[in-house]
Length: 344
Image 1 (cartoon, rainbow, N blue to C red):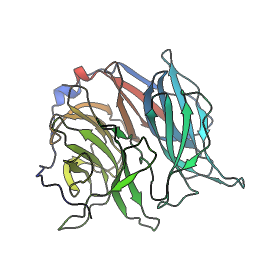
Image 2: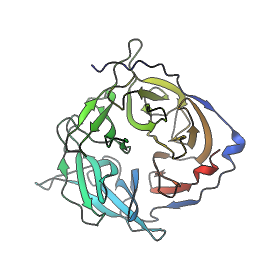
Image 3: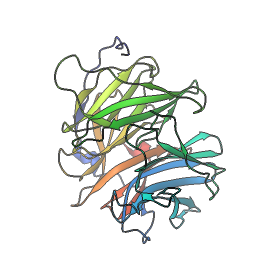
Image 4: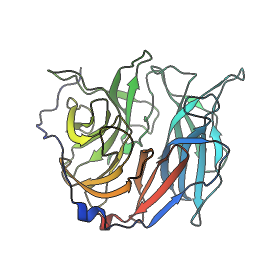
């Protein structure tokens, strides 16, 4: 059992400023595709490479159907390319399984990796990964990660200043209802080997069922992870030793309808969170910011109409702009660009 970090952290609270949420206009708001060979799309991921933006998601008849594969598009000269299927769950015997939750990450410069899961592997076994040199259309064969290593679950890894790659991950046991538990996978050699670190259980009260964390980097060296639960609110956990140990999970005051979130630390030191600000349903979809990880302020509302707007992914590109992708009504993937200087 990892030792508990000797630090006291205050749960996050929310401050709402309605006048500010109405003032921001996105730099870009567009769909990655208008039409596609699949009727349903979900769980997008986005990354910046030296050749531009790359986005991926899973698409097919519906989530869990055997025809669901991983689809990818590149943004070139301000336009997204037509979606191309780059991975699926086809086995050597031609059996096909559904795929889900791709995560794009540049493990090394010029080497893009797409982490994926498919139904051929139980939730307790290793995830899968494919690599593309120089972001070319041809991707290598899927390779299985070591047993017990799932790779990042939904949200992007974080590269620490010493080169350590910290992948936010979680498990869902196969029974129904499943048991959810957060963990982190650390690699100090570019992904050749991984260590698993789990936050300790709470000393009192019921365990918090949580998955799909995102990692924030604080100026004092602490790490904060925040994400999805079954408890009606987002969870958080903190590390004071670069992710080697974590505090027990606690609930924030931010609502969560058991839906995926994503977050990042901006270059100006603030932290940004994309989440559904509701305990039920998947609208609205909000942008909130904080300086200390405790007091969050709503800065923008991405969607507030009836429908499902969910599973965001967010990055900050080299030009300082924030790029967000998310599921739009399970039909398309939307791409929105914000100027963080306007997020007051």
